[in-house]
Amino acid sequence: MGSDCGLVVGTLFSRDTYARVRDINAEEFSNIVTSGGARLIEKYWGGFVAIIKGNPNSKVLILRDPSGFLPCYQQESANHFFWASDLAAFSSAGIRTDEIDWNCLFEHLQSPDTRRAATCINGLSELPPGTVSVIDGEHLTERRLWRPWSFTDPSQALSPQASIHELRESICRSVSALAGAFRHVVVGVSGGLDSSIVCAALGRGGHRFSCLTLATDDPSGDERKYAASVATATGASLSARIYELAAIDVRRSSSAHLPRPNGKPFMQELERAYRFEIEAYNADAIFTGNGGDNVFCYLHSATPIVDRLHFERRIAKAWRTLLDMCAITQCDVPTMARATLSLLRHPEGALNTPSDQSFLNHDRGACSESHLLNDYFTEAPTRYPGKIAHVQLLTRIQNFVEGYDRSVYPSVIAPLLAQPVVETCLRIPTWVWCDGGINRSAARRAFSGFLPRQVTRRTAKSGPDSFTAAVFERNKSTVRELLLGGLLRHHNIIDPLSVELALSDSNTGRGQLLYRLLDIVDAEAWARERSSAELPAH
Image 1 (cartoon, rainbow, N blue to C red):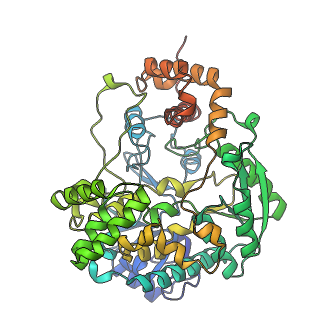
Image 2: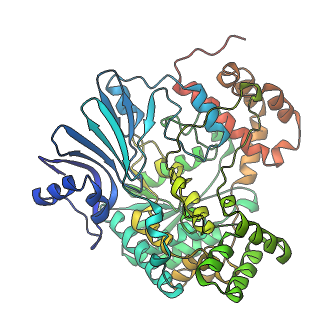
């Protein structure tokens, strides 16, 4: 949709009615221009990038919505600025996307979930969600229009009862709005809470959808009975498939179409299963529950206790939250009490950036940290460390948004990350999320009448761990060949000795290092697929 003042690419919904907006009249677009784009975020939501002619007319604004549903990457040349939603679009315009920035890749592998504005492709950066890029002649500046702290202020807080109602309504209305344009949706269900809530919202909205679940041969990764109960409760059909070990090729990255590696081996089987479902139902969208843990404030710390102490100033109520967090974390009371006192003295302790140096080349030296994609924390309200931790969880969900190659798959949407849902969740106090000693408590209560009790009361679920271990064991020699004779070693990103030791250790296939090693393997496969560089000679 567009006018003489600009163009909105993607999907747009009314903030008030949740109805799809297909056209913006000249007067409203003029208001958007006058606001510098802010009105577009305040009055609408969706998955969009807007191109706006600013005032004065020499200015042009590129605005990305806060959800980040529609990717937006930018490249600058000597005479031009370029924006596109995927690497293929840049390539078709003659812009190179085969030159890897090895320093950025090294930094990325230290904290793969900490998304930075710079990508791992040389010269390519990402426009942060909720941000407007302003072109004024030859100059380019960025201005943030959306901040999570607007919804975490105590004056915005919802009561426990209002939390349940508002959360259910925002999820159901957002899911229904997003599904309204599609004839049939395939939902990837795991048997856990988050994807089940997406199904409940689709069922409540009367949308056509079917469920897909994958199981391992090993019972530890078989969630079919829970997935079946969700499908029955929401009136959907269920397809259940078994992960096939022989179909996995560790030489191929499932994120080769992206400017950063973030794939997992089991995703190849999930992609194959989705292709079957799309063909069987003539489906035109895939919905997932991805990001639910982050949005629903799944914390494992004392931060909700400190938040409640500051907010309500009543020891007895904070004590209840302390007991709740002990139940969730399986921590004893004295340890949780000490953690609470420590946070009261040093609230900045809630800010942490996890780093993983395993298998990386320590001789390379630490990179100077580049700008975070969503750097909200210079203005964080340290009085409420739980809200800081919640927002930090939200900054780690962007990897869940891009997902599958849009040249191969139809729309892939994680509706729990819709802007109205995120803003509602930010208004819910952190201690409400752990009420009763159960994680994501508000979400469970909001949908307890729509889903089987065995699903809403589950606090943990299994995954494809046994399958992942089998992939590793089957492909160990290939992994050795890829890593010890590959691009990451050649560019001094990995430490070949630690890789060799892990591959020689029989315990690696049963521990956490397995997942880290497979992430490194995916990065090698990604680099080989994306880079124009020749493999080093043996």
